[in-house]
Structures are given as structure tokens and as C-alpha cells.
Image 1 (cartoon, rainbow, N blue to C red):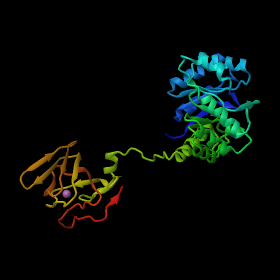
Image 2: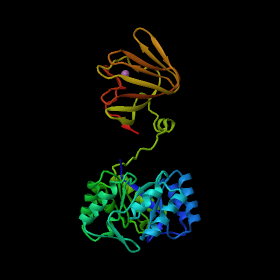
Image 3: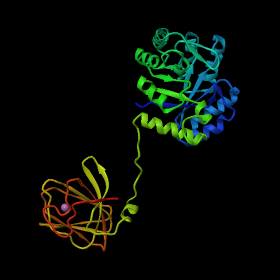
Length: 351
Ligand code: NI
């Protein structure tokens, strides 16, 4: 599974006043994980925000900022009242776990000792790893929220050590601000990371500083880091056939492993031939085709297809003035098979 990006509606560890507006932008850009903190906006406002996140089809996260036990308990109760999907942060696990029981909220506390605001992670790698192990041993702890970039030691070593020490997901929170850090977080084995301030301030490396461009840049970089690049737009057959006029000259419209998807316009009768090894699929997109065989003829109407097995002699004929046909066949297939005439095409053009 790929690394998950959690967009935090927060700046300097506080939920921003215009969170609702930024949320709209994020949802429109297809961000599916969105969080906020219990500091910065009143509870009823956070409730509305959470509702908008959920109705927008995203998963909601509340990250606890409070550091003392009593305020952490208050934050956990607020998370329950708000109805978030995931509660992140906090260190008083023994106090919070009983509250969360039966709520369905997934819990990702902070390993290690966290101090100050904005929060700083204190202690050695060994101490933080020991804390991570201890926390992860609780059944009600579903993962950890590691303030890796808020620690002063070897950050990469710390991230890897924590990810390796437990078999639950680890989210890296705080101060992730460029593609290098996203890549580092992935290499360490993290399940996700948060970005708030950098995107809201337009500080993520990208020419445009507005939030929409910033989120797009983060998701583009994340897709590259995750190796999830999918530059595969839908193609329209009518538009594709409109790109050429020539008949009996197949164009390559796509590749499926060793198979080619070809588009061809038929006019009149072709040449009798067979293919020694290749099977051919003919799908009639527009018009009507007659497939002649040595023993019989087969009419193929618009929206129908016919598969001609290798070795079978055939001769396609357009029954309409022009018949548009989509072919699916191995890349090695020559249009005239074992025959050769002036319509034999050795080098196909791609459209
Ligand atoms: Ni053929």
C-alpha cells in the first residue's frame, strides 16, 4: 500500500480560522485524509468541520495538542463528541484508551516525550523506540503518530527504527515540507505523513503558492514517490477514428502487454489471407462488416465483434461505405497475414 497524505487544516499546530474554505479546496482536489487540531476553533465549529470532511467522502483526523493529562482527557472526549475517524497524538494512553473503548475511533498516540507548543519530540532514539513498542502493545492503539522532524537526533534512523520496531502503521507528523522528506518518510517504512503549514503558507516547492496548486504538487510528488503515476486518460473511439482518413491502414491506438489495439477503416474488399500464429479480434465500431471464410460468410454488425483464430483463412469486406473496426491482436500481426499486396503495412502509425 502506498504512503498516505493527511492534509492538516492547521498552521503552527492550531486549526486555522478559514478551515472550512480550505477544506472545500482539498475535497475538490481529491484529498481523502483530512485532519485538524483541537486548538484554534471552538468545539461546535470543529464538529461542523468534521461533518463536512465525512460528507465529502474523506477520513477525518483530530490531532491532540494538549500535553497535560487533564487537557488530553478533555481532547479525547472532544474527539468522541466530534465523531472523528482517527485520534492522533497525545501521550496519556492509559487515560485515553478506556474513553475510546466502543467508539470505533482509531487511535495513534505519540511515542516518546513530547513538550512545548509547537510540539517538540525529546529523548534518544532508544527511548522513543521503547515507548513505541510499549504503546503498540495495547490492543486499542492502532498505530503511532511520530513527530520525527520535531526531534533533534538522526531523524531518518529514528523513523526507520520506530517503523521496524512495531507492526502497526506509523504516521510521520510535523514539518514535512518537500518531496525529499516525503521520499525519506516512505523509505523509512511509514504509512503516512501530515502536511499543514507548508501547504497553507504556499511554502511547498511549487511555482504557484495558492492552496490548490500546493495540494496538486504534493499529490503529484506523492504519486511519484509511491510509484503510483497514472498518466492514462480515457480515449474516445469517435475522436480517434476522426484522426485519419486512409483505408486499410491500421493505426495503433493502444498497447496491452504484447497486444496492440488498432483502428482501421475498411472500404470494399480486402485480400484473402491467414495468420500463422496470431488470433485477431475485429470489433465493428461503425458500419457493417462481412467476414468471408472459405466455408461461409459472417455479417458483423455495429457493436459486434468476431475473433478469427490463427490459421483460418479470412477476407474482411466493408458492407457499408466505410466500416470502422477496432482490432485487438498480437503486436507481430501483419494486416495481410501470409499474403502481400499494395495494402500490406509493415510500419504502423500510432495515433
Ligand atoms: Ni487478418
